[in-house]
Length: 463
Image 1 (cartoon, rainbow, N blue to C red):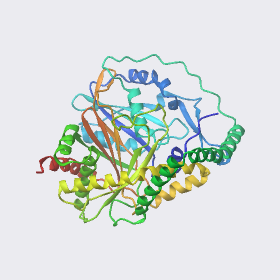
Image 2 (cartoon, rainbow, N blue to C red):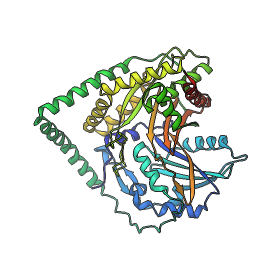
Image 3 (spheres, one colour):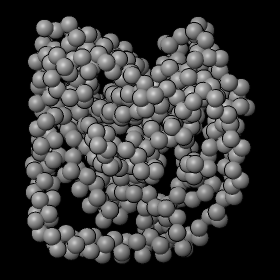
Image 4 (cartoon, helix red, strand yellow):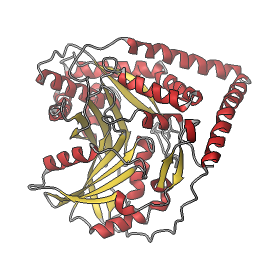
């Protein structure tokens, strides 16, 4: 039986419409010269067997009786997915950011595997770039790092591997898909009952889990309070603008030693400074909070508490909701407020509650899931201002055909009424911020990016 999309993965399809495109991306900048396009394609072709999902498409179940399934694409053509373009003169960072905004404004074709990789020539300073674009239903941020590691090499002497022979599996019979969906629908309540029965065999553990989820739901109840109206929320269009900021990992560690807080607390404090600068530059009051959804990986963690991949490409994320203290002008006081709030959110088990609610959505028929996803995004005009996602990346240099990747930046989508989102990706001693904006309503996101960098500089010099 083909793999069925999880409820969370299905929701990323359900909330996508003509203006909300649910793909994520990483943009890598490499030392040059750029490889030959044919060599670039051959490198990717030699690794496709490691990520079978790259040659699969989404197949709907007749009558929407169940969530869609992944099936092999009998017409897969790598030339459609691996693309080659060049920057206009002078080929600077500004031109690269503009090109990425245009690429990310284009919705992925659902009749084909949901990914593209763009090789971008002509970046000044003897550099070139790679934009890897993937639909969010296919991969979350942590497993996206795994895909990046598959595509890239750990050493500069990597050579393309010969493609592994591949034959697509026959497309499933529509009747078989419908029957399988009905069987799964009938089986799911039974599987949930079995899990509850197993938990009740150890009442103390079950009670502890229920208490944790209850505390989390109580903390999430604050979301019903709308935030003050601002230009951060409102209708969005189909076009995107994109920019970046960057910071050395060592500078963030220095701030931690001087002023306390976790690594993520410092990062969020810098983003808070960025939003403060953006609102002030628009002539709006900064005497407010900016509420952000902070995705949290629920994947297994290593001894240092870092989320680790498990070889699966499905989304395994939950969420916390933080209120960034934009009203606080003092950088150190701002950091301390962020740190105190994040510690409270972790203690409230808010992420556990969100993950539990996501699991319960497995009971919902696909049409109800789609409706719920749309209501969640459309109803967020003043309850949620932005999304801030932080993904730890590899802290060693990576290569493509002998060319070292100098920097890597994330792209995360807009949705519902959110006009600005922020992604953070750490790589080889740097923390890189990718900021997405609506082209018509947030063309000034460079102000936010410079505010992020200034926020870190202010913390470094603060007594």
